[in-house]
Image 1 (cartoon, rainbow, N blue to C red):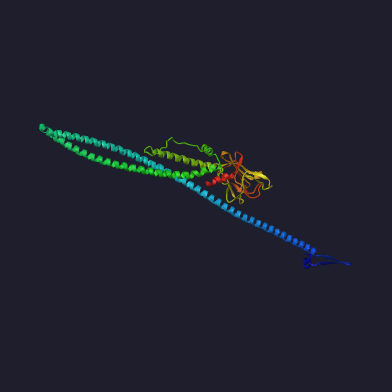
Image 2 (image 1 turned 135 degrees about the vertical axis):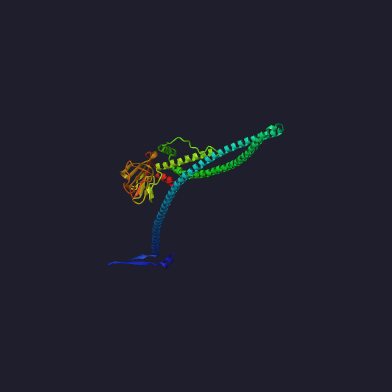
Length: 438
């Protein structure tokens, strides 16, 4: 072993010269092997450390690149969602226009229904008159037949006693002439009444056919009106149910505010004749009640905040609940929903109400508050400008201001709150509930 080391690693001397002397350092085979091992290990460690540092650098760069890609993908997704929201808003507006068109069609069909029912009553009255005439004709025919039989009997009696009553021949001739005349008149009356009876039967058949046709038309009209009412009524009730609003209490409140009546006391009747008249009356009454409920729900939908406060493009930047404060980073309760968009974007009232505050308020900046029915109150904060004043009445969709960056805010956006009896609730639930209708 030692000879092999000496062969490959012969003894080496390192000379160290100074001004006064010369010294040397002897390195034997073992020393050279030890130094070589140390140098190899040091070089290997340097290579490994360099590789680790390079891998960490490449990994960090890859993570940054992935984060950038994810950010771009998120922005694309946000833009897609914004376009989808705008499309849904357009579809909601189109559905609302179709709803109003359906209401107009229902009104026209209701008028046609009342006209058809009036014609049906007139046909039924005419049928009753024709039946009366037919009965009178039958009675007249029976009377004529009895008179004819009586005259024939008198004629036979006169012929049997002809020989014993020669003195009454002249009177008999007169009687025969009268009988013949009466018989001819009776036959003509019978033929006339028979023709009248046949005509009356035909008229009865035609009236029955017309009545059946009118009934089929009424059934078709009823079905179309019921379908239109179902299409119009379901989205309104679904929106109120999704929002969690007490629908019955809201409708009762609306009824109290829209309860004026007047006019003469005239009972509403559809028809008092025919088998299906009672059923048609019940259906017509039910349709009128359904139309009244649609009108009440439409009015109720305008009284509570079931719409979007922004008329323009935007994106959600912060939701309802706990979050980190954008100013100091502390954990705070956020009572509203933040929606960011371009400065000056139109801000509208989400329901009918009265302006309870319009001005500046500490961290809210320029703020508008609106009081609505059922204890609802909405807040519109950080506005760039205000277009209403305190005490003013507004309707759903009226412009109340423009989006801005006033107050305690980090950028242009709308802070939108909904409160019920002073308690904040999640506004997103009410905005989403209205997407199917408004």
